[in-house]
Image (tube, rainbow, N blue to C red; front, side, top):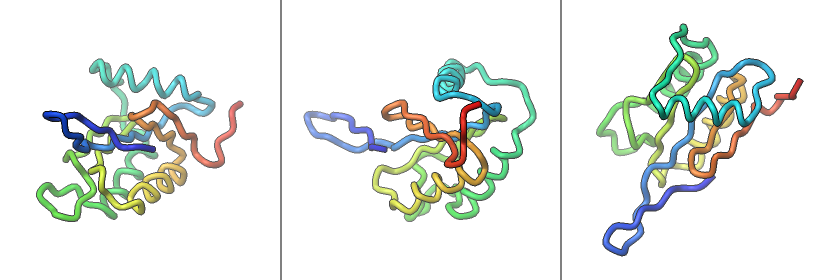
Length: 132
């Protein structure tokens, strides 16, 4: 996972590092996640009750890292976090501690969520995920 850089007047400056976690049906593929991301970016969200996996992930990550704007030690570049019935977007400061990323990965795995790295389009299934 990498940070995104933007050129401003010839100087490189870090912008947010973006991840999202997705609750898709069992057997979902990385391409299914990318399709869901494209639909979200186009403003096409499903009208469904929040998936319990997403709700529990959100509660756990915001308990560890509250999404209060103006905190000096917050990992969040954007608050509130973007949430939908099937996913949570996480816009992180590029200098956030590695532990934050490890916690996101761990919690995504615990809640059986697929992790999408916006920077390079990689999809990471939960550790015990197997394709059917």
